[in-house]
Length: 164
Picture 1 (cartoon, rainbow, N blue to C red):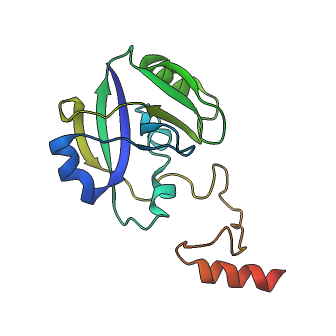
Picture 2: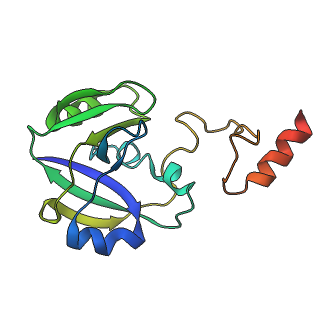
């Protein structure tokens, strides 16, 4: 059984513990999936999406660890590229063996039942990247389109307008 981690707001934890993880629309708005990452030896890689998720306004994120059968078909790939259909075990190996696994995601095309949940645990709230992998040390785009409805957007826009 392959172990995966799903990051969510701490407010969702009691519901998830009772009912499991429900599917959400993927970025292409075609599939209904559960977003996850394989649990790897590298804590950063397993929880890399945390800071990006916090940009949406959530204060505290928790990790939901769950197991699915090794032969379960999932989609794996970089968030901005085409995903490949592989088994859960292959997806876990693919991410673990990747030279740079930043930005990878696993899409599970079904809900996760409460009986499949292994644990719900707190995580370090400063793990991961913001905006895109490898963005550390680079200023975010300050245009009004990129900063719409973002936290501290006015400060970023003002700094951007002062430099242009």
